[in-house]
Structures are given as C-alpha cells and as structure tokens.
Amino acid sequence: MRTLLLAACAAAFMNLAQAQPAVQPPKTWTTCAACHAAQGAGAIGPPLVGVVGRKAGSSPGFGYSRAMKNAQITWDDKSLAAFLSDPQQAVPGNRMPFGGVPDPGEVAELVRYLKTLR
Image (cartoon, rainbow, N blue to C red; front, side, top):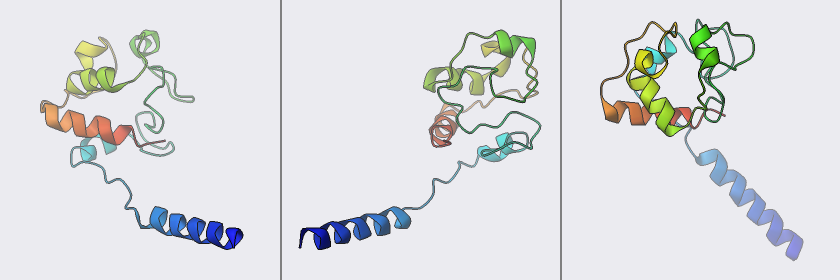
C-alpha cells in the first residue's frame, strides 16, 4: 500500500512539473538576444546561462575586454541591474556596444529572467 501511495505521489509530481510553463523571456530580451545566447555558445557576446553568481569576465572560451576581466564583480541582482542600466558606467572600458536599458521595470524583468538561466 505504501509503495502504491509513493508511486501515485511521484506520478502526480511529474505531471505537475511537466504542466508548468517554461519561463518566457521579457520583451526586452530580444535586444540582448541579438548578441547573447541564453543557452550555450554561438553568439557575438558570451552565453548568459549561469551568469548569476558568476564572476564578470569568466565564461570559458570568450575573449573579454581587459576591463571586464579585471572587474571585481560577481553578478547578482544589484550588479546586473547596474550593468544593464548603463554598461559603460558599471564597467568603464568594456566592449559591449550597448547604451543600456533606461526603464527600471524592464531591467528588473531582465534580471529575473537571467536568474532562471541555469
């Protein structure tokens, strides 16, 4: 009886997990996706999977600017928000040709999305 109950619970959990929709990127992500891949490599910029908690300039196989390699940043909510808002102010001399996202709400949505990329 106990085994049957455990099997039923496991099946219910699997159905629930499969029913959950994937996290959809915010509309602003299209700007990022022009240069960055959410998963894997193959883009102009470094892949962003696992960016939260990673040291700036440390994704293997990408040729970062000296400024980014020397930045003493570990990406978290605050540092990502600052960088996404104004990349040149957050890391002066970085090579990302992007002026930033001016809307704080859009920045917050991007940070929330980046946190899902594991």
